[in-house]
Length: 96
Image (cartoon, rainbow, N blue to C red; front, side):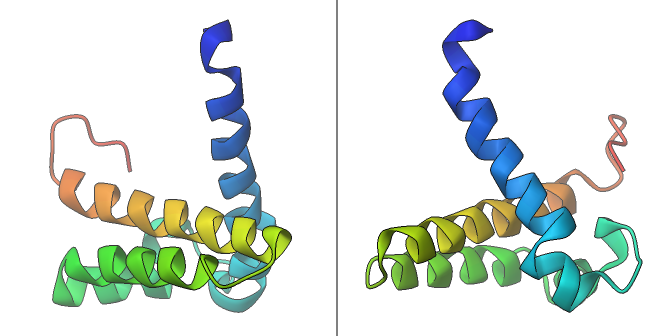
């Protein structure tokens, strides 16, 4: 597991941004992640929504200074995670 410490750090940063940063402030409304607007829209229109948002954030990151680019890329990770959650809904794994 030590060989993946740097990956864990980045994933933890994405989690913190979503759970206590801009994402939380703008979108959470005291709701669990799977009930927030991003997941509501995804459930309505499909996995293309979070994946499109992730691509948009990746594209935007290429025009920004380092710290802002990192924030956009962390947002892309969160949107990608939303896509994964959507795809796993109803599986026996039931991670929700």
